[in-house]
Image (cartoon, helix red, strand yellow):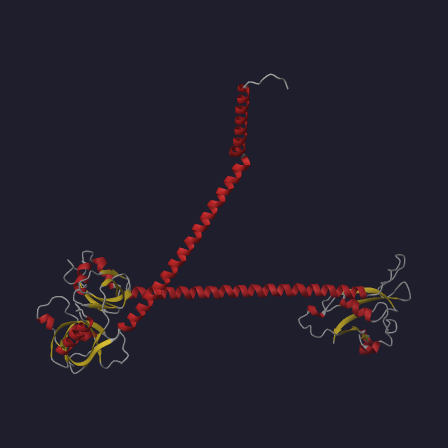
Amino acid sequence: KSDARISPFPLAALRFVRRQVLSLSTRRMFFGGLNDPSEKLRKEQKKEMEKKRSKATAAARGRLREGEQQRETNRNTNAETKTKSKKKEKRYEVLWKAELRVRVEDVALKRGIRTRREDKIQLPASALRMLERFDDEMGARQPNAFFYVSRVDEDEDEDEDKGCYCAALDYQAEEDSVVIPTDLYKRLGYSSGDEKNLLRVEFRSRALEKCEWVKLQPKSNEFSKFLTRHPEADVKMVLENVLVQRSCVHVGDVFEVDFSGFVSSVSSPSESKFVFELKVVSLKVEGGEEDIVASLIETDVEVDLAPSMEHDEVVERIDTLNRNDEEEKRKEKEKKLAEAREARRRIERNEERKEKLRRFREAMAKKLPLEPPPPLASSSSTLKTATTNNVVRIRISLPTGEAIDRRFYDTDDVSSLFDFVLASYSFEEEEDKEDSDFCLVTRGGRFGEEKKKRIYRSSSNRSSSSLGAAGVASGDVFFVEKL
């Protein structure tokens, strides 16, 4: 309000200060929340929620990928299974079949062939023309052709156990005939000297896979004993010499293994057996898959020896005996448990019967009338006398030999005598407890049957139901007589 002029410098300074204050408040308003604990907590919670959401999304996507992979795997597995089943259906398809006359001759041995000669056969040229036609249709040549041979007198539905696979030596045999070696002739079960038999020869669409592993089982324990006595015997070399003579191997084949030239000495003079029989019990082809027949051409075979058949039989007998012993022990244990249960039930029944009998006797005792008081000590009385005229003292001899006595009023009912007996004795204690009806009878003395008192618990006494009316006197001794 003064007339003095205000210098512009202070006004400019005020404006500057004002701008600084506004700027400072604005910064506090917008940036002061960075150090605010609640704001920091909210941001951390938001980040945590985002992490959880991202993890859940990733897990869901992973499950979707795994499900898709599993479905793809299942589709591939089903496709492979269908393919294998189709291949298996076509595996035994017979492409060529002929019944040829058998001629036995060791052609391979005569030609000096040292390997694969025990199961190679000579076929006619028609078989070769069939193979060439088949190769042209397939567009590829088979390196090794295997034929399935079986006796004609076998059933038409023969399986691979009745015949065997063999390789072709050549195709120079006469038409309608086949030349087989002696070993194969014996394996097929032909009788020696009879060459008029017919052999069924089939070429199947099955391609024999290469053998990778075979398990051999000796027939007797002598094989393991022989190897124990002769540790220098080269088992590997002997088995190689045996397997190298075959073109293919079947489950069930029996090889004769000869150790004559593979031992350095004879342990005992009586030892003369060096030939043992080994049976093929299982085999695997390349890839580890089990099969019943496989090729031995151009392959390395791993041989495993199983315990002998005699050993298996002994083990089976021991297992049978152990099972029988366990069965007998089980039956004996069950018998003892049954006996224990039966004994426990008997004890429980006896306890129940005793408890029932106790309650029954208590009930009978409660039914008894009030007993008269005993006579005064000053009065001299015997068993047959009483201090009062209306009191009777009665003794009852039980079947167990025990005697019980009690005082009654002569006006008491006759049934009180029977209740008194049942309160102390029951016919259920005896073995014969079907009929528990009884009567009370006196001895009778020298007067015989005429003077006996016999009291029944029947309706005949109801007209004179009191003890006095029934003729019971003080001092009477009654016996229990079962009706």
